[in-house]
Length: 369
Ligand SMILES: Cc1cc2nc3c(=O)[nH]c(=O)nc-3n(C[C@H](O)[C@H](O)[C@H](O)COP(=O)(O)O)c2cc1C
Image (tube, rainbow, N blue to C red; front, side, top):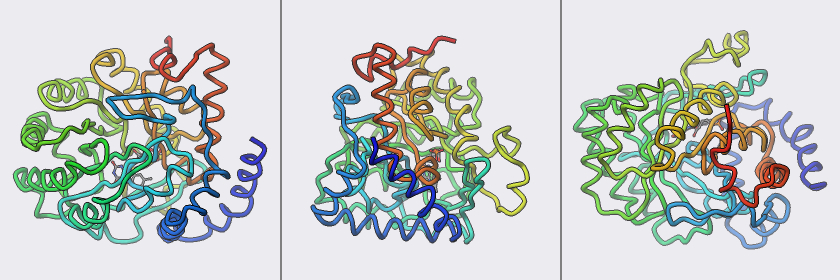
């Protein structure tokens, strides 16, 4: 892990100070371009893998028929158009979620729409589901083979046209159909805080309608629902009861938080930002609480994926011990650098060993309150 410490030093003291002086969305765009180029050639993929990836048998698992070399995934929103699927395995991710992808292409909300809150270790996100649309992205990915499980996050197009429930459901269905045979699992994103019409499918009746319609599309892929961070345990129970009657295999906990009074947020950092949801550390406890709750109530029937504020192996392990079979992140990587993924996997292996577990499965749900 000497190499990782060296990369961590390089990121903290060279790359990050440069990145953090530039507009966050521009940096994201440049990273995507570089990532696409590095993913194109065997030699650059191999070099990235040697520099970043960490592998160990104790981190492997098979979940819903998918084989994961490690439990750490890239969360939805970083690779919106599925352009980094060649490179992400070399960075060390065990899986990746592309999107969110919508029925129609969408420019997203007006810029600026991404801000950093460094003291709070958070981002304000107001992208508004910018993506190339399901047809263009599906066309690009159709012939591809993936070396890690790829999830497709589906949402409804951010437009006044999808505010009526019927139009919204048709939009989700269009994207769902386009990806029925591409990738390994689906996520139905019902918790984007930044789009026209809010989050209508967090309402049980509407969710029932949406899931009934998606049930009519033939697919063998597992399906996850992604919940908001600010939902109460009783609200989540009601939504899970809806999911019980449909083709849903698991839940992703959670999306961004909207609560600006979150104790993790340094309030003075909010003076110069616009509207949007908050990622990173402010999401961590919210997500952990919901993971614990769902693991206790429905953990035997559903697979849980934990996301929100993972900056270290300890953060990931907390989610696993509370009941998550897999974890995802974005913000931690932006603050700590791409070597964080290998570091988390290395340190997770050590945590498993310290606690006497032979593999990651043995640690799931072991947290005692
Ligand atoms: C820049 C950015 C864009 C995001 N876009 C999406 C999205 O399109 N769909 C989605 O389900 N979640 C999206 N999210 C939420 C993340 O997937 C994740 O749930 C949240 O950021 C918490 O994880 P983190 O603290 O590791 O970033 C986005 C997050 C960020 C930071």
